[in-house]
Image 1: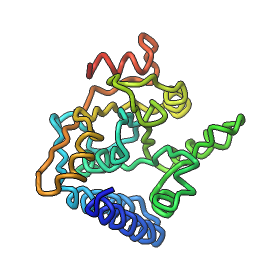
Image 2: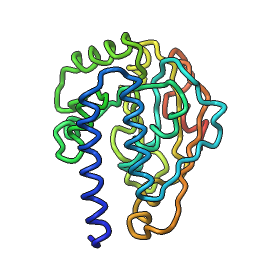
Image 3: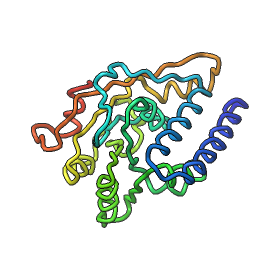
Image 4: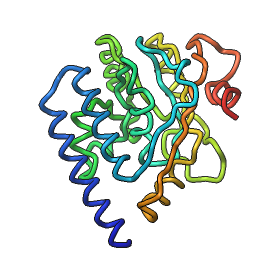
Length: 226
């Protein structure tokens, strides 16, 4: 790692934990949303990365949804936060157990609004129960249906079945967002060339009815964006 990359990593760790502790002190979702946006904006500003929503008129201003997105980079959650910053939408992120315990992300994930999924646990009843409670409290659910970052050359990985189950069980319309720019390539470049400005483009798709069985979720997503 270069000196710039090391200092950026240290700064990101400090910032993530700083906002993690600030999130611990608030309980209202409006306050959590403001802090999540402030964190995302501060970190991406440091990297000179701007988020541009190509069709903001299609983005719902409020309501409850299962928000889904493709996933290529560790900064994808920040991108989604900034893409939806001018709305009243607030969602609990589905996060891996490893993130909950992580030194880098743990404090933020535990306090920022997340539902932990343990893929090693064969019983998923508590996971779906946590989701149901969040939805009952008026929140959306945010998820990357591929389950993990897509590190292949393919534009999109296979969706896990759990995403559609979440929508069905909680009667959530599905809001598809597409990070059109390869955010991982942008991140790598931003860490190397700090003075260059970058833009990541995000597309908003048409709402997918959770009851629609004509296409699988990944095919419905691909039909809109690929």
